[in-house]
Amino acid sequence: MNIIVTGRHLDVTPALRSYAEEKIKKVGKYFNNVTEVIITLGVEKYRHKAEVQLRVNGVLIQAEEVTGEMYSSIDKVMDKIERQVKKFKEKLTWHKGRTEGEKETPSSETTLKEEGYPQIIRRKKFATKPMSPEEAVLQMELLDKDFFIFENDSTGDINVIYRRRDGNVGLIEPVRG
Image 1 (spheres, rainbow, N blue to C red):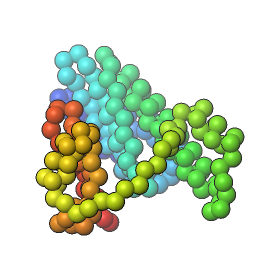
Image 2 (image 1 turned 90 degrees about the vertical axis):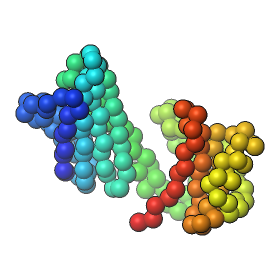
Image 3 (image 1 turned 30 degrees about the vertical axis):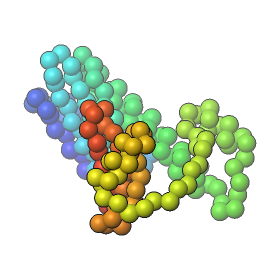
């Protein structure tokens, strides 16, 4: 496991670095193939912020926490990461445990709802037509929606245009590989 500890407006002391590294090693008991961990510690005025990005099986798990003291920020963000890793591992084992033709049992659905997993309540299919991202933005505005899925006419890939909180528009493009 490659652990990178960096500081933003903060000099990371050896004690702080070893404390963060010891805390993140607890995640190793859930997965033995954690490829990279990036821990960013920062201070802005009186706020001490700890951010963690964890790569497991090509999946990025991240969390951040802000408190008045750096060690408590590290503790809280590590607790949050540990909960997310547990949840991710439960999802993996739940999906792997089912066979191809096996149906979900009501008890497993109930358990997932009790655990707080989001449920798919509606499925919708629609045809996409090739268009430029600019045309997709216009279409999203005409439909008065917060996002729009379309086939990019220059790449042939499915893209998503979405409205950002700042009023601008974002584009999500898939990357193969």
